Length: 172
Image 1 (tube, one colour):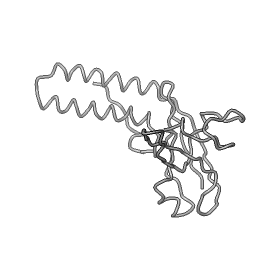
Image 2 (cartoon, rainbow, N blue to C red):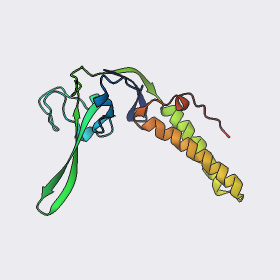
Image 3 (cartoon, rainbow, N blue to C red):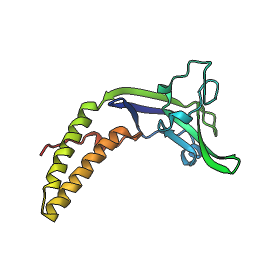
Image 4 (cartoon, helix red, strand yellow):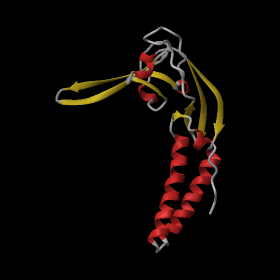
């Protein structure tokens, strides 16, 4: 199984957009504990020594994108309890044994685009605050929501959405 992804950089934040993977087996595809992510780097286990706090190998935090097996356990300390989440990186399919490869095919800097979208949204918010018409306010709110969704898409890790990839921003 291979996961092809694009690395998106906005400001100093990194996210990944991946193409729909072709899973090696149905069991891997339908398992709710399998996550393709880079959202929780503090809870990722080192790919080499499989510990959270790794000091003895060449583990780097920028290698956190991939496919993970998610486990949540309840930790108890005296009378306090809280959930603790762990993400175990998968190198091989746990069901059929096929190797899992993650291939970052390109790195894209979307910082300027995100800034432009934010500027347009800020201008629209100023128009919204000065607006008296309910109909015009509703239209402006919808446009602002769409622009915020574009910026959120840049920051979030997930499957590539072709509609968002080809979307053009029109200044007003």
